[in-house]
Length: 220
Length: 246
Image (tube, rainbow over all chains, first blue to last red; front, side):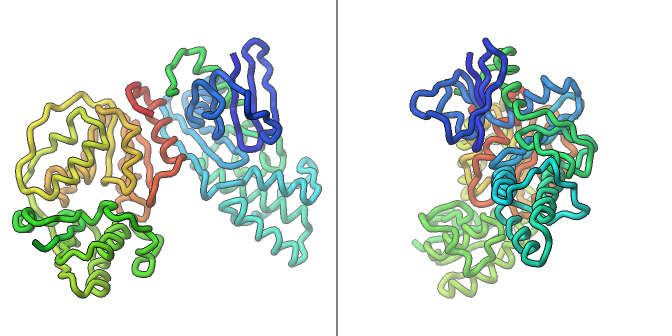
């Protein structure tokens, strides 16, 4: 059985017979013939027999990975950010920001390539830009560079601004469980003003696996 | 016969006077016009219901518009009335303050019926002074609290056994200024607390959601995006509502 999380920049696949997830850039996907058994992600409906809402997949992934009754789990994707908050075993709050929080992950990757940066070598800056979305935040970087700040420091302030914005969006938890590709970015992870537990980029796949194993019906 | 427009819920004595005339409920999208047509007169960051009322009024030009500006509506309606007086000099703009206290009951709010159909029936019932038909109530599996949304498409995500609370319940009861009824909720069922963005009721919606043990606070502006719909769908699924339509 093939499970997939069709993200904006990367698609994640899990064959339950092999149990090792695979990561493929979305632009390399062969679109015509691909079919999976169950999918999530914003492109998922095109490829799957069964589609699961991304928030549901995230929540189910959190339930299975965390074994905790109360937690906040934030997924920072390329296109959007979303979170679920559980209290005493019940869903208490959730959010999905595809507009004001748009394109943050995408912009971070773009800046890394454009300025040829290595995020593992950058220090977390003392202050951040006020960033509400990737596109609007770019202008802060250009202004700072024009005013004499180094490109790497300006980008680091931008990345910290994104982390602070995501933290506020998730309700300022004391401990934040983080999902998504940005878990691999040490500058981003260390920029949060709280303790962060990184769960990696395959949390939604774990959610799909949990849904299949529990036999919960999902809308087609 | 001259047409009449209403914004909010005029008092019952007004409804009795106008119910034989063609009535436009100006709060609902009635004309195929861009909501941006309201922007020369109201800020873009403003209640989408009142922006819709302005767009409708400009297009339909009712001879008379009754606009409720009391505690059963909002201050924004008061200011919108002033603007309508200026931009529609040929229409008679009549401000009302509806503080009717006679309870008409809430059979639609508590019955088993597609939520979209229920909301449509409730908003239509505002134009009549007659008592409601009796309907059997159902056991609720979910709750919808709030005003009728500008975008009714979100309602199709709920199960038919959704009970309605908040100002929509006050609408059916024909008591729009009824704080106790507006704040009434059922803590035993997962409930979506909805408000229009930029509406004062966002504060009450979020407060009640915080107090409710199984709640989702949601606000939307003109149209509900895919993320808003996904939140409702996921909330119902994760709350164990198995008969939601998705």
